Length: 239
Length: 302
Image (tube, rainbow over all chains, first blue to last red; front, side):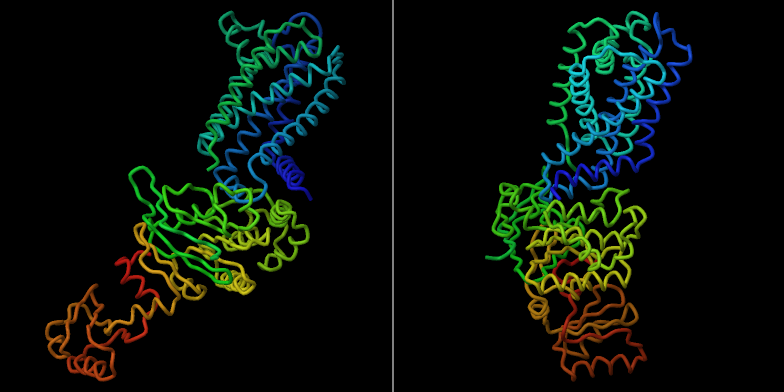
């Protein structure tokens, strides 16, 4: 079997075997989707709540997989010497990174199928642009993977674990993923808009036809993706 | 061409010269043991050979290749066993071997390799469920996944039980017999004595000795008798009796600078018998690798 395919298979298998990873990539998004679609704790504005909730949760799913899942797994692989040993095999770093990217995309496909199916059952009726959804996912993945790898490549295993989880919570709360940006107080709303999570939820809401299209979140995503990937390339340490 | 060539290797980290002008070679079909106390520069040297670290100066060649400039080609010729970790904690032994064999396009190898290191009944165990000795054996098997010409093993028997050691030594000897160059580091002199054809001794970044075991022992063929007895003997009186200088480098351990002839040994034991002093240990002639090592490095902490 080809080294790249074998690596993707191994990464995917390990991910689905890991309870915490499953909780993070599927459990939490599904629970938040069902909860915020059916319970009126947060005032989500006019229209059906599920219309507003699904795109935010899709953005959350991308962040969970690309930043938290990848960041924590890579941090521990670095700690356990896995990356170091791979450096002495013909797999090589470019193919390892490509395999990780392919694994993320595979997981995102599974997440989107699960979340869209549950959303549909809850009455979600999007008017989506497939192309924009794909662009939003790819830009979001580049942003969050860059952030996750930068942290995993610099911080020690446990410190990285705590920092990534903390960042996840902040980006989730202030990034319009469950609480729309419009519901945040003025200054927080301004901060939320320029966060990668805020830009991705806004872009996702536009992509599924929930709100009018503007260029702002897309530009912010491109800037974040460029910054995060450059930082990861410059700062990542393999050992 | 030697499988591994190291010439005037210098590895400097900031002000520290971890390796300071080391040269040696390792041949195909031989087990070369790199020995030395902690901080001797063993790992720095090996990591320069594996392509992990850029030498400050000097040259290293593995299978005729520059480990950094020709790294893409090098990885097809080497197998590496790191001292710590290297495997995904939740990966099963069999999966890890299949993955590493896939990196090398070596499809049929996993089953044969796992049997070779005696883990046939442990295939389903994950890395974190395996004992320290089982982990070492799996790491050894992973290093062999690409049918390497040169293998680098960092402390291969550390933390391994007696049974596991027998398996590991057997695999290493078989590799050498098949023409593979095996380079291992160890802090256990006994292990080097059992396995190595060729020994390289480092101390504080410098090469202090290199050669076959027989050569190293021969170099150490000093005119001396070593013995152990109660601490604090009257070495001056004993020296006069034997007509040679006697020293006590560590309490209770004595060195007599006299040829290890039967006569001299008899006079020594006679002197002790007169004073009713029990003899704990006596060594004349052939030295163990440990004697050579201690003399060269002046260091008991290997």
